[in-house]
Image (cartoon, rainbow, N blue to C red; front, side, top):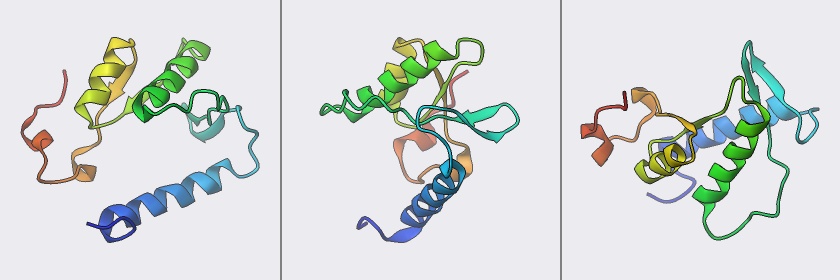
Length: 114
């Protein structure tokens, strides 16, 4: 599948438009309330833009986790490697709900973590 085409691209574009609306008017580095008990924060530290995107994301999550120890952050991923690395960094991991998972992958046969 080419980038920019298909159902996944449409869902990604919808998610990006939603995030743009939610973040509009917010200050970088400050949480924006999504709903009761859920905020979105944009990481403003741009020094860690190395070649390992997963590690950069996990470092961001770890930084935010340290800022909010009472609630913590959640890493949302169905990527096995990303989930394992997050768990090694003591980050909480959440899998995508079944209806949003890409069909036909090896994850279809793997039970969710307990």
